[in-house]
Image 1 (cartoon, one colour):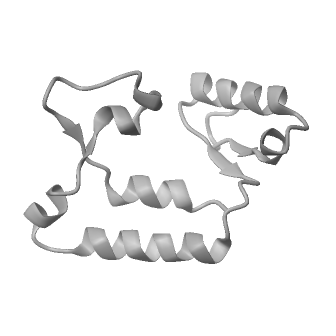
Image 2: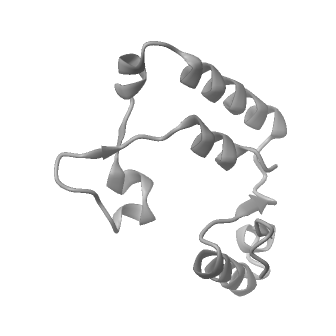
Image 3: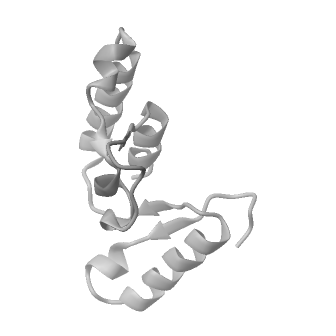
Length: 106
């Protein structure tokens, strides 16, 4: 897998059960080689993705910063299905770029 491109993985074969092993292998390779990937074939309506992008951008353009910081998530709910966590009492903030990257590939 080339480090010059972001891997794009079609997860439809995983979701429909036709080739779960291949999709899992691609995800594993992407995670170990580059650390992230994009997905397609997820079945999420493109109009909904567009709305999410718009709302995320609008939220992160808000001022003041203190208002945005009210919306933090516990680290374990955002990472590895709860397998890792920060120091006790800390949370993880999700930035606009993270959200926009998540929803940008139909």
